[in-house]
Image (cartoon, rainbow over all chains, first blue to last red):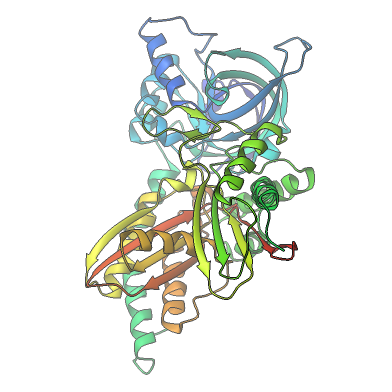
Length: 219
Length: 289
């Protein structure tokens, strides 16, 4: 397990260097949203129905919900403070992520829970990693926010907006899907399925032993 | 004396607010034990960040998770308890007031399932379940906010005269389907028997039982132990990125039923949000968890 401190948005070259299980600490710029309607709207942008609120190509897009509030003063970026951020379940976005990863040439995505095999294939093609954030990590993740750079789609619910943030030392997060077609989530499911026969045998033996402690099966 | 509207309103709001800012002592202990037992390096690392995150939220008074979920209350009313005002309305008004004042503020998670519109209010919100406790002179309130992360993976199936092996296989199926998603290590609550509605309620209540407390009947306790061991052989691990620590507990409740046997399975994520207090007839407020 290696820990890397890397600049974001993550470059394709950096993305391709990372291995499954590696830890990453982030500096730089990221874009966050927790909204399914936001993802559909991004697809509409790809279809030319409206412009993107800001440059999305080559960015690092994470499934993180955020609560922001106005500060009343502009500190170089938007006059907003982020009160907290935390990941949401990425698999909700499975239907749209392959297209967003491919068309926007994203090199880092993330959140919690992973993405499906169509996204894994798109990520291999563009050179993109999936980073697993700690769910229930709001107190730690929030400390890394340095500035709100831009907020897109202020007409949407707060946690659905696209928020461009400058962060310093965000993480560590775990590389859970790499840029070479490997997914911790897919291998965890495969391992669980492969282990089912031995787990069933274990449960049967334990149950039999409880019902008849003098039986010869090992407890 | 009697339990007042203001007391119910204040206590239920406070239970919700407090549940967001730390994790129960049993959940913290479970993480520390998992860290000792875990054989995967990345998993140990994740467990340690979990502990750090919970401690940081607790000391700073901030939220552990940005998703405060929806407010869910289990209210056990003593048959000797006396009320001087409306109880259901007190819980609703307590939450309505809380969302206006709570710091940090809450995101709008209350969702109308017919339109997917979100806000702070909604039909039947907060979700409240009432039960009676014979002989008790207090109202015992547990708050367990629920969000999508672990909430969406609960499941129920109805079997006909199943043996224990069949029930255990179904529980493994539900855990495998949830897989890496529900922020493991999870507490798994199981309800067996009764009826459709009652099995679901038993499973939910089972998630509220403190970690490490087994069912009083040895046969059920043994089933809890072997299922936890079996589930931890699946390999999902903390945050689902691999490891031995998938379930910190399996809690099973059962009730007699007919030959059709519902089996309900519910999950609490690692933060296992849960607070509990009692309000007595004499005005005393007792914090249990």
